[in-house]
Amino acid sequence: MPAAGAPFVDDYLAYLLARASTLVSDEFHREVAAAGLGVTEWRVLATLSDGRARTINQLADIVLAKQPTLTKMVDRLEATGDVVRGESATDRRQSLVSLTDAGRDRVTPLLASARRHEAGVLARFGAEQSTLLKATLRRLIDEMAQGTSGTSGT
Image (cartoon, rainbow, N blue to C red; front, side):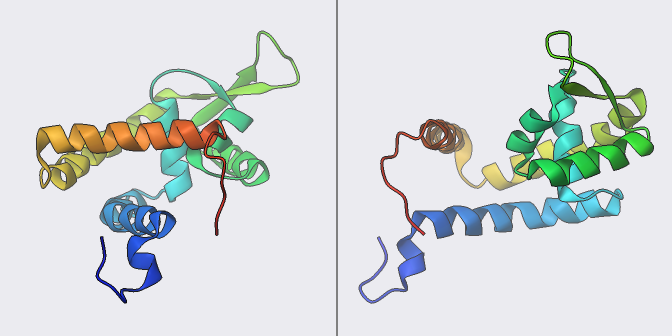
């Protein structure tokens, strides 16, 4: 709990999450930039690295981007040979985006680097607290995605 008279943001969840995200991400995002990728491009390639094809809408939700922006980005990633679009077996109106071998080669070193970076950040907290932190964040995400919070704020 912050001291009396402390700034509002010192105890405001949305700010704390945003600040933590920025501090944790900035160092790694410099590596992403050095690899010639933007943060959202990295997120797309990392998301697709599990081998599962996804629709543009699914990717937009996962990588925290707006659908029109993501569509243009996927066009660029397709032009560089990192991803390919294919038809959905269940809905011909939707295309599925998949990682190519070239895209996998491009993202694999960054995945390893991201894991090392994450390990360095979490080492400060120990295994038990790190596991609890991730579980708590996943639960918060699930709760908020389902709209069960019942409140909103700015």
